[in-house]
Length: 133
Image (cartoon, rainbow, N blue to C red; front, side, top):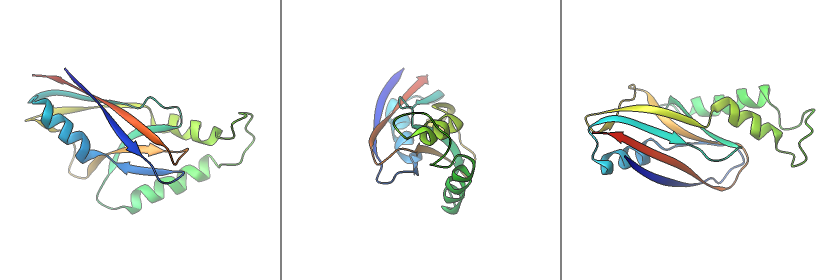
């Protein structure tokens, strides 16, 4: 098992950061040919998801749709004023697992891994664990 913390700095309040290449580099360095790659985000206002990484309009459209479902201003009681970020992060999820085959992430043709920020800009991290043989 190999574990590494992937540092991420976001420059915007809400954004999707394509981390596919960085995670693939971690998998390659782990020298594991077959197994699993697990990502975990130890933050309550950020998450991780799999989605299309070919057309940048997809992530833009997702942010617009999330804003419609969970607006920044709402009937929230959380004193910090970032309830929308907590809700959106929970909708994305805080972890995911991707199979590793032949030393590479086993993603679909159009799939990529995204770190999702909803309370930035901030310095964050994703914990990446690669297991297998």
